Length: 168
Image 1 (cartoon, helix red, strand yellow):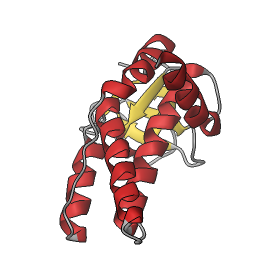
Image 2 (cartoon, rainbow, N blue to C red):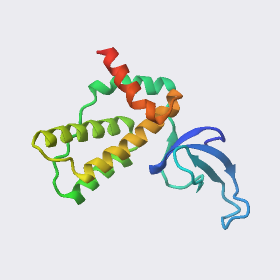
Image 3 (cartoon, rainbow, N blue to C red):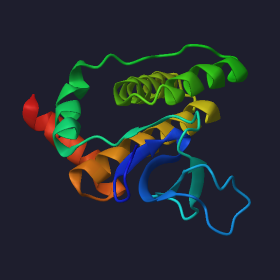
């Protein structure tokens, strides 16, 4: 069970701080169940979820795990999906997001970027589905890295770029 003050990755909401664990007072909730009160770090609403709900939840990565992951980025293979049907493409990308694995997010981001570069070489723009899912993946990844590294979400991309450059 997570404790107040801990950072967790909760479903597709990204990194949240556990605010409280216990019964929900003054709400239409089962008084015999314990709930997490979660505060997403990059959104304003609060989340109330039963401790035993089936929604994916894991501890956010540590500083050491974040730095190790960033050093692995050059060796993570780009996952390029050449599917042209937007519905099938969404399903493919959603499966990567729902894995909640940072390495898979990196693979997805690298793949969509590479696909975008190839598309631009042909004189076309990247598709909206690709753009939308790259942004979602970057927000989830950069949000978790930002918390682990003690920086803003906006600083993460540059930090990754510099770290990877220095390592090569």
